[in-house]
Length: 299
Image (cartoon, rainbow, N blue to C red; front, side, top):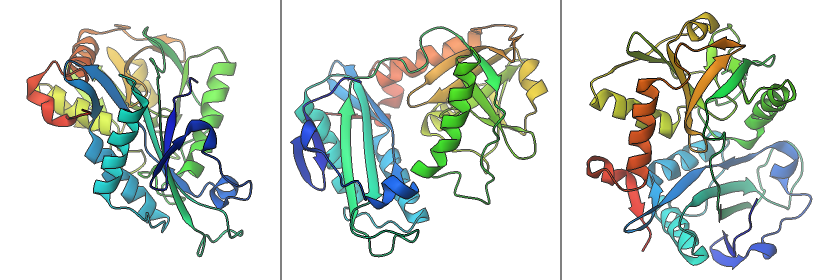
């Protein structure tokens, strides 16, 4: 990980090395924090943050699910994210806002703990690489939707993702695919999944997955191209039998899946996957006027 110069913390821009917390910070012990992941890309007009407002709105939604009251407005957080990108003077990278219960109270219930918020940015290239990836079904199932808020980005939820990802890589695969408690396809550790069969695009429905912002973007782009996009319960066999498959996510962008459990896709990088990926990258780099409203230019 490459350090940058500054981090925004509780309303102030401070040096990267000074962004510290106490070892007894509540969220460090109990996973009681929420976060977002955004990317910004170099464009002819300057660095452009992809779907800034939607990410900040989801940050506040996630905070509400654990009764964490962020002491800033959405507009203030948007401005702080822009400022943090600007002062670090990098053209493309990743943004991590994190809201957490801080130091001052221990015990499972965070009531009475202070709330802190930080925003960090750093350069980050392709998360899963540029080539189609090999995926395995994880022995760990996705968290039951009645166990937590699956549509919120709560830090404690992500130990499930860590287990799945570490297991997949230890077995020689690039990434994992988690099933839900009913044995249906859910999502990757940090990605949503799509498959293509007979030119129809399918993706698991909301309710047991994180409804990703990149997922929503790809669905919109595909429908604008005239493709049928259907939210549908999928079995592993549907993925094995797919013509194409791909992951989406802020970090993953659009990543083609070459195989699942050593079952190769008919097209490791299919024409629809490539078309959607190329279009997505043209949008985030400011080369597609139709979707310019998804970008916030940092000037």
